[in-house]
Length: 132
Image 1 (tube, rainbow, N blue to C red):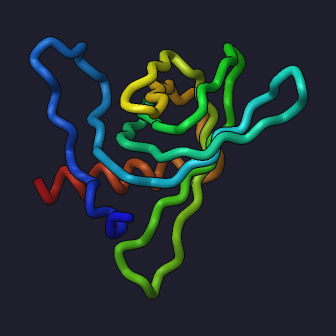
Image 2: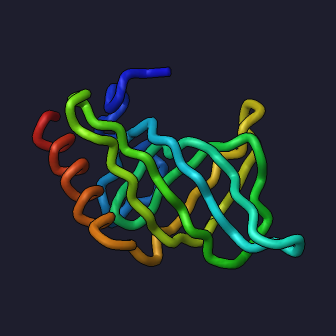
């Protein structure tokens, strides 16, 4: 396991990558993705690998086959052990999912923020950008 925030950094854009409206930062945050399936509610665990105010990339060992919005709980570790971990929640739509090196890599578009999730993400992005 990496140290908290050790991978928070601005993600450079590839030459042929589409232009994103929001800057992304690389992260290594645990996540639980909850969604409705035919058998009832399901939960898949994974890691957020990069995030912006409009979307994120999540890796997990299971695919999520749904066109319905998903609910995501994200655990954001504190750099300082005396502070608690933040847990934020967002709603998102899975835009793509591919199998890559035994993990499913999903691109998600954030559609709604729960509570102060938007502010927490914005502060992390601003902190990373000011350190670059």
